[in-house]
Structures are given as structure tokens and as C-alpha cells.
Length: 221
Length: 216
View 1 (cartoon, one colour):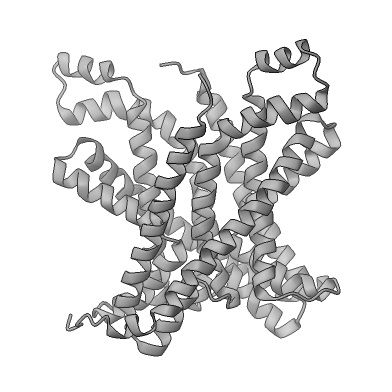
View 2 (view 1 turned 90 degrees about the horizontal axis):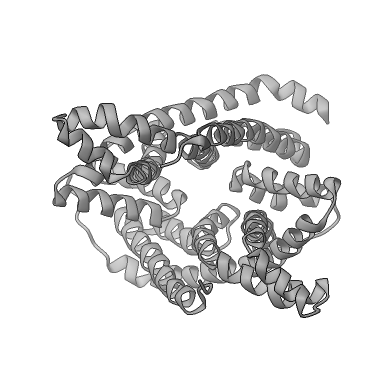
């Protein structure tokens, strides 16, 4: 062995890790927010649309779910600007990728959530004279959101971990910070121990907090 | 544009073969390790249960990328020297093993307690109970999510490109470095990964439907 742990250099550069963690969280929050919008719109469209639209939405979902995230990140950052005339930063590019990525997972979540809304609630909405649009806004979506809350928090935590892939296009999030310290100080074991602890603590703290939120808003039985 | 892909096809095929080889190794090794640890988690003594629980929750709580870097850069630092290929396989296997543990736990937990009690009542030993009563039934619960989870191994294997291993992902990046045809090559790569993973998830769904007649 002969490897003596020495955390001094890690603490000296801890701002890299702390800033990285905050950026990871920021990337995850922005991406899931956009992902929720994509997921909601497509799920509502899916359940009311014809065969062509359904096939299109299913193709988007299946494509994203079956391709490695790293390839999607490369495709959007290095590939897309070669065919369309737009310029964006690595961070914007990653947020766009992760939003599309989470959107694909959330369409599925919301679609099955909409199907799980009890028939009786929709009928009750009809009975009191709500229009289809009012039924969607006041009856189906609120109930669906309560049903899908656990799946939503799982998606968020998994997105938080997926932000580590942003390091491959040099977005200075937590994994990038770890790489930086790794290459500049060679305190390899220490930095990955600290970063592992940071991902675990943050992940489980989020899980705990989100479970509390879920309990507050749990669908009535 | 297509000419570039055709010209690079043998090279890309080599990368693809490596992607499949890494995935296969990871899937087989993690199946063995995961089932053993899963049995330990469900039936083992308390310290073993705790050890497996901590292992699984830790591995599943960190990004695969961090796990890969930790194993790849960390092992030599503590005096273990593996080729980068095997470091990558080890890291991905750890990640997959934690998944297999959870699939197995879920599958075994779905078997009603009465089954195991009945097997005990007719005098089967622990091994016989597992082999003749629990596993045959749990298998049908285990298989669909497990096959679906193989796609995670294939997708995760794309990360080994970061260790300089020439898998499909890395082969694509190298061809792009030479031809600057980024978009067609990334789309080509995406379609290859998609074909493999979509076939796997279709198989998983079909199996799930086939086993759906079972009521407990």
C-alpha cells in the first residue's frame, strides 16, 4: 500500500468542489424544470392525439432512453453547431441536453400518471359542468402530479447524478472539480473519497427532503 | 458524408465489438456477484446484510462517472495496477452489481412467505428451498427488469471512452477528429446504440407480458 491519506490539499481547493456541487444542483434544477414542461406538454398531447403524433412522441422517448447520455452531450455540443448556425456555451448546451433527456423520461411518468387518474374524478368534473380544458387544469393535472410525485423526485435525484457527465465538455461541476484536483494535486484517493461523500450526502438529503414533500402532498386514498 | 462513414466502418466496427465485449463481461460478472450478494442481503446474517446494503446504497448513490474515475485513478495510487480496460470493467461491474442486488431482492420479496414456509414444512433444506421453490418463481420477476437493465451496461460502457479505451464512442470521436464530420457520425453512433438497446428493451417488455399471467 504505502499510501498515506492527506486531505490538506483537498481543503485548500475545496472551493472547486463546493462551487461544483452548487453548479451540479443548478444544472439539475434548471434541467428538470424545463424537462417537466416538455414532459407535461407531450404527455397531455399524447393522450389526446392521433396515431402519428403518438408515434412521433414515442420515437423521441425511445431514442433518448436508449442512447448513452455522453453521446447526446457530444452530439448537442460538438455536432449540432456544425449543421445549424447557432453558438452556445458548454453550460447552455448541457442544460439543453439534460432537459431533452429528462423530458423523455418525464413524458412516460406523466403519461402513466394521467392514465392513473381515477375515472370517477373526471366524471365528477363533467357532472358539475367543467369544460374539457377546466377538467384538465383543475382535476386531471393536480391529481396526476400527486400520483407522480415519487417518480418525479427519483428522476430529479438521478438527474443530479447525471450532471457529472457535464465534466466531459468542461462544465465546472462537481466531477470536473474532482478531476481538476486529481490532475493538479495527485491526492487521488482523497479527492474521490470527499466527492463520493458529497454526492451521497447531497443525494440522500434531497431524497429525505423530497419524501417529506411527498408525504405532505400524497394523493388522497 | 456517407463515404466517410463507409471508409471508417471497419474501425467503427472494431469499437463496436469492444463496446459489446465490455458490456458482456460486465453483465456476466455482475450477474454472478449480484445474485450472490443479493442472497446475502435477503438471507444472510445481520452484519452481511448491512455490508451489502451499504455497498449497494453507496454505489447507487454516486454517478457512474465518479465510480469509473475513482477505480481508474484510485487503484494505482493504492498499489493495484490494472490495465485501463480491466479498471473500466471493474468499475462498471460494481455499478451493475448494485443494480442486480436490488432486482434480486425485489424478485425474492415478491414471493409470498407461505411458499418458503411450505417448503420448510415438507423438510427441504435451505439450498433446496432456494433451488426448487424460491428461485424458479423469483426468476420470472427478475428477468424482465434485468434484461432492461442490460441497456444500462451498454450505455454506461460509452463512458469508458474517457479512459482512452477505443470503444464505439471513442472510435466515433477519433473518426470525427480526422474527418470533422461530427453530426453524421454522432447520429450514426446514436443509431447503433439505439438498435442494441431498443432490441433489449423490447425483449424485456415481451417477457414481462409473457409472465404477466402469473398471479400471486
